[in-house]
Amino acid sequence: MNKSNIILIGFMGVGKGTIARSLVKNSSMFAIDTDDLIESMENQKIKKIFEVNGEAYFRTLEKKCALWLENNIKENTIISTGGGFYKQDNIKQIGKVIYLQSSFDGIINRIKNSENAQKKLKKRPLLQNIEEAKKLFDIRVSEYEAIADITVNVENQNIIDITNEILKNI
Image 1 (cartoon, helix red, strand yellow):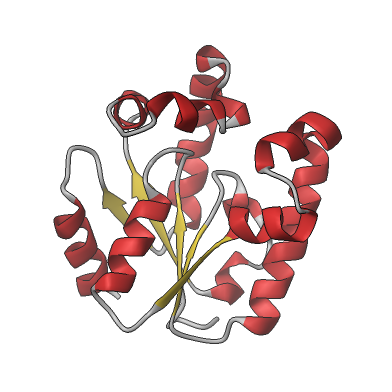
Image 2: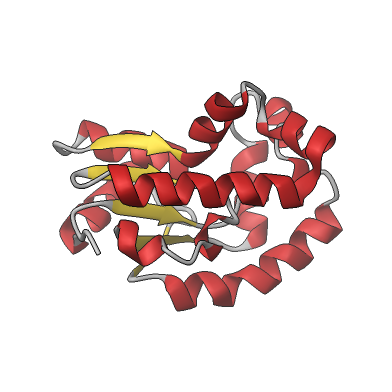
């Protein structure tokens, strides 16, 4: 495992991309996003990939992305991931896994209180049905906790405090 890479995991909308950008500003690290890589690979938005090809196809793209990361990203990189990326078999070979923890309501409130809230909700296919999303969240919480090297509670925390806690723990 390359311990100098950081992989941010957590439920969709928890703030992985926002925190990755803050970490970049406050360290010498570089950031990439797995969903951005997949969109570039497919020349299509995640939502469209789900609509046209389905979730199973998207998960095969995540696997391809994870293998690429393992073989090509060697050090000093922050990797923000999609909510289901944590299931990749080789995640521990890519880097140190940090679980960004929040309650489901905390995540929904974070999204609803953000700029472009409707756009952010709309682009997340698995958040279109809140009841189903809550069930998925409940399943994933223990799985996130099990795979994480570090857990950081981000609910109602400011970005600087979250960033500092992560930097202190790596």
